Length: 201
Image (cartoon, rainbow, N blue to C red):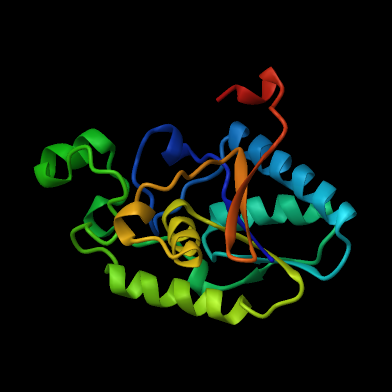
């Protein structure tokens, strides 16, 4: 069983900037989101005891999210897996959406730009590493929490569900919910609503 988690909100998320391999710290909201995910997973772990582990992207925003989750659940240090790193967005990284749309009009308003970004990771490379990670966890009897990012998370879920790439590009990427991959199904699991004070940015 696999749980795919996106990191909490970051400063670049708040500014509507493309991140990719460029890192940015969690905001106060992002920390609260990570805690909410941790609390929801802790409840699941209590109801489904067994071999739980956390694997994480090497990027700081994912590692901080994973650290918070592991602490809440009481799990060992998350294990870094390079295959969970976010897609490289090449020349788009650190730019805002309006800046990207102005410089590359063919990308204006396009959702799911991974694999299309100038100088970025190809869709073939992304597919290969996502499939490799899934294949390594296909027969696992334990429960693996994968703390990663928006686009690699889409690809993991899309491949697992057998979706075409254009449908995969449009999958949601919530930071207040996560997805369980089990028995060929992808299920969204919502976290408890955050208190109003946690929403301050």
